Image 1 (cartoon, chains in turn purple, orange):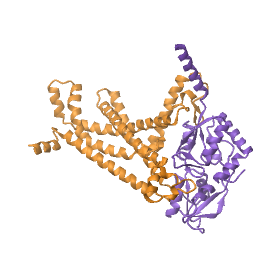
Image 2 (cartoon, rainbow over the protein chains, first blue to last red; image 1 turned 180 degrees about the vertical axis):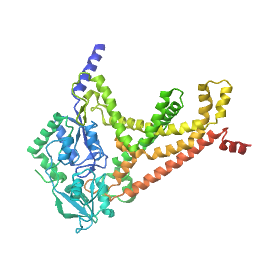
Image 3 (cartoon, rainbow over the protein chains, first blue to last red; image 1 turned 45 degrees about the vertical axis):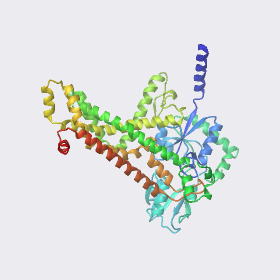
Image 4 (cartoon, rainbow over the protein chains, first blue to last red; image 1 turned 90 degrees about the horizontal axis):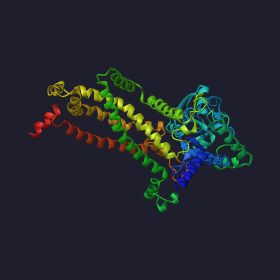
Length: 235
Length: 294
């Protein structure tokens, strides 16, 4: 009897080791339609569905973790979760710190949202979320930039008149149009597509997700998902 | 939550509100209120303990111990909270993981620091990456309690150190005259009398601690301010059954009421404690109590 219990325990332990492949996916949860918190309090959106499907294809057990955008890279690097899947555009600057998979959405222009269509961008105040490609772009232009921690606050700044326009991903701007806010004709081609971020020392895991993304591109399911959530143009 | 909530777009007024306020997301808000209260309930006594230890150490006759007590209070009081929270928590977390790494994976041949990456073996991860999410959250909570306690302990130490010096010297001299050792005089005479001098300072600390909880989100613990901001944000009909414009004002007004009530309750409680502590003390307050009773 005793050896039976011991045997079962040993089996349970080794079985547990075999399953040690839980991958923690870090996201922001405040950037609809990419990722947001739904009514039930769970993470939802394009990247939720994408991440779950990728994990299924890579045969990994995945868990979702929410993290502030500001500290999303430091917390990846120090090992609080294993990957970033948060609408993060692939840029050279970020690539120096972390590694990216291939892009899962094609590069898309960023758009402006303002109270009126004839706003003077160069002379006005432009809002953007801190440490985004849009914020970097506005700073490069030499325009007046105000940065906010969350996307929601950038739009609130335009509504209150603190900023004249907000620059963000086209798909996010689309969800905010209306109620006195209009999208400008002008767009900016910045960024190089959106990919998943990994620690530079984590090449194995990155390879698995890279292959899964490729397989979703090949069989067209990625395009279907992009169309469903209207996040970007298709491949 | 309620049976009539299946299609909120058909509802209006109070029934809509009752459905809206009981969504899973709002439940998270209510849970976070509870989390904050538990955090305060644990942190306050632990910080007081740290403070008492450091204040006693700072008075010690043994020089290194005195240096430790003084060093702890001045360094922690001098560093900005937010820097302390960001740096210290990551450093603490990595220190724990590094120690486990040394014990559990002695034959690991790769460096722990690879560029800016901090890499330990899977078995040394704290908590294990296989652990369910609640374990991760509890661990974050534990780190939060520890960090808050260290920060507020330093302030409490300074308050208590001052309070210990405020007890009239004659009291200790009398104790010594009765033949008490310095340890006996400390525990029997000094400690019971010092609280009345410490309380005003400690009550200030308590009030500051109550309002410091938004720092929690830096540690991944979602507190009430985080949820109020998230819930109050604009919600478009595409992503929710309860679309609404920016309602930050309402959520923050509710927070305001919550914090004001909490402050009021704290004041009442602290007043009572003060009355009790003043009883029989050789202070102006104690004198007034004696006269009122006579």
